[in-house]
Amino acid sequence: MNISSIDVYPVTLPMKQNFSTSRGQVGNKNAGAPHVYVRIRTDEGLCGWGEARPSPRWSYETLESVVSAIRNYFDEAIEGVSIFNLEKIHTLMDQQIASGLTRGQPIAKAAIDMAVMDLIGKATKQPLSQVWFSEQKDKIALSYLISVKTVEEAIEKAEEAKVAGYTGIDLKIGFDPKRDIEIVRNVKKVHPDAFLRVDANQGYSLKEAMQVSKKLEEIGVDVLEQPLAASDLLGHAELRKYTEIPIALDESVWTPADVARAIEFRACDAIVIKVTKMGGLSNAKNCGEIAKAAGFDLLGGGLTESSLGLYASSHLFHSLNITTPVDLNGPMFLQDDPSKIKANVENGQVKLPFGNGIGWEVDLEKLGSLHTAHNKPRTITTKVFREGY
Ligand SMILES: [Mg+2]
Image (cartoon, rainbow, N blue to C red):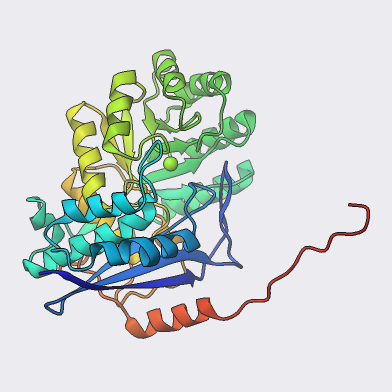
């Protein structure tokens, strides 16, 4: 069964609230969120779906670069290839857009990989979990994301998380060490039983991270994620020797080779698995398995994907036996998406679909209208330079 065509649908999904990390604003309520849906058809009439969620403040890919990579580079290269030869599909994509220090355009490649994995499940009439020889589970526990500037807001959000039944909190820090500590302390006080994952998104220097880690030990957090720059594996290794708090790497680890380097440098205790940054389900699974074999813990994460990406990632996290609440926060931030059955959070958990492949079903009418709205001509503002500047 071979790939016969690829359709790309860039859309802007409406958001419920803004979203910032120490790297700046990654989601804007007024501008909406960039998502790219990909449909791959086969010569036997099956359709597979994939999603890319580029987040340029988090990594270099943009909505435009994802669309261009798929339409202008991958489409022609993988047309006619068997859906069961995913290895070849990745080789062809890597030939089209080569690696730099790490895999080139992983978020665009992830959408293709996800759609092909969906097709493999559909073509063999199995849910993804079965394709991976694992158990299909019907729910996943999410962490509640808190990214705020004041202690008061943090207390309010932690109370919301507790009342809503979340058993995990993903707390964004890395803004200002002193204020970060006060925010963590108060969140812990409000919801002491939650699995508390604090994520600095590369926001600290080594000295700051050392100081913060000692305070975090007193407060009692479960894991400190990506305190230092993505490239600074030696710094993370040094910090790890200094503190008892487990250190997780997220932005440092994109490929199996990155996992191997983290092992070599003894740079962390846990790896954050994300389908999009790792170039798709198959590569994320490879990364997870290597990390597990090396004795690392695994954490599940995402880039606020919509229901499609959330369901696909959840099936993978279950198959990797990730048991802590995962950071798939799309439902917290997105008002709408083109799914027939949207991911809905109840008691901090999302019900997962049973069905062949990912089990996601598209609402084509909704996708069409979101796509048309996204492509409406927009007013282009030009910078006016005053004389003398
Ligand atoms: Mg992270």
